[in-house]
Length: 142
Image 1 (tube, helix red, strand yellow):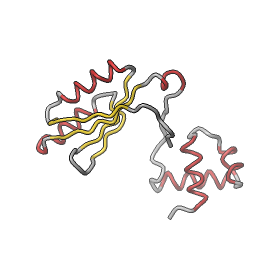
Image 2 (spheres, one colour; image 1 turned 180 degrees about the vertical axis):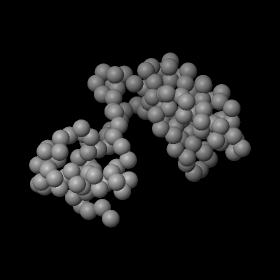
Image 3 (spheres, rainbow, N blue to C red; image 1 turned 45 degrees about the horizontal axis):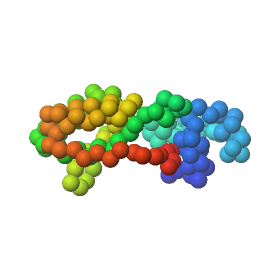
């Protein structure tokens, strides 16, 4: 069970995973050692699996992102998943319910590069069809 303070700690870490323990302690009105122990417990229990890099600035602003729904021939699902994992532009891959089997979050440096990746995905063995939605604006990200 995660307490309200743990939820608040997770929210602060999601906003900035590099924030100092001291700053977290001040924000939560807890001692440094309490915050360190909470983080260690959340990591040990698997609630916090790791920390990642989020691109920012001009690099991120120039990225083009699309959500790509992918219909896969069922017998080739594992092979298709493996091939998608090898594409560095595929940031995330989800198995979903509905008309499509997978949802890929694809990021590229330009519309031309995005188009090339979408063609590459469509040509992968096992991919029956795709449907793409280009992200026009990100309202918020957690």
